Length: 416
Image 1 (cartoon, rainbow, N blue to C red):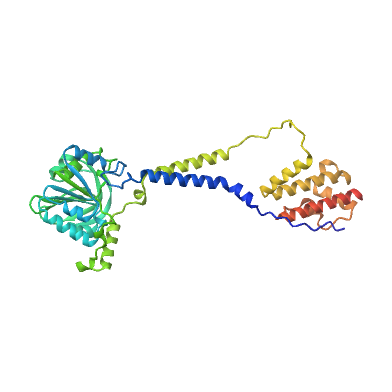
Image 2 (image 1 turned 120 degrees about the vertical axis):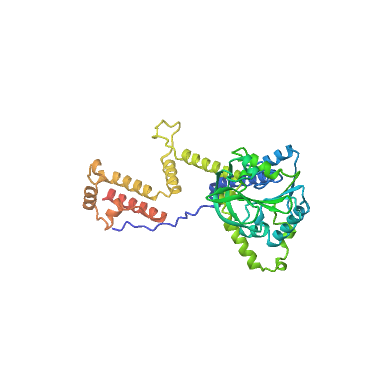
């Protein structure tokens, strides 16, 4: 006897409506995040400044020291172009260059020429690399980077001795220039060098800007050191180099060196400044990422919580057996649980045909007993064992075929 029947093709591809129902929640969440991000960026676009900016109140900003200087009667001016910075130099001015490594070769040479002519002025260079040091502070050589830590002055410079310990380190320097003063040694090499220039003028090279940050200004002697270095003249020009500066696009070939040499100098400067990637990420993004991670963990715990055992209760209305079977089948299909559906079909068939073949209910699911009884009653097919106790079908079509074959087997047992 042949129990196999032809299965009708069944489509399991989700409809457009089902796809929309499944994805609309995710799309709504993404849309909310995008709108919130755009709104947040628009609100903060006018007041969000970078690191070491005297207008920034962020932990890495320098607004605190700028306000202290203003309270002492020192004017603080922000310059973003080379022309503004060089025009403001003079004997009554302190010029702080926040990013000397960002300047091109021609910009560095122009800046050095302007500051050298201002014989009584002060120039502060923040963490210049090898190329920037050679052009902006001749006679000083940049050495490998060392972590920032609390360092003692270990020099005779009155400014450093009054300030005491400070958070310094970073790029270290060596010099043989006459009259130079080296302070705050880190692993044997100084991280602050004062180089005399002209009459009563000087150039201060600092290996790290950390002591100027808002978050560190009240540590150690950082505030004292910052106020003395930046407040020695009535005017302070805070130069923040910008890539939009017209002078940054000037042709450097006029200086006698080609693009390849400029690229090598930039690479050496970048190698000397070993700031980590996290130092370049705004603190707000780090906090936002931490909050999103915590929310994801809480959501996972919430969705994975145990609900306990099922509780049976009396249904308020009677449900048809066909509706219950259809509902369970839809749940199996949604979960792709063909194995459970096949087990349920086979178990129900074995339970119904066992009494018809004289097998007790307790042995209905014992292969040796049930298969022997069924084979003695009908002409059993070759695949009887796999039909009643086989593996789970791999496709929906195979599951439908299995159900048809089980129905055919049960009808034959009943009529035999």
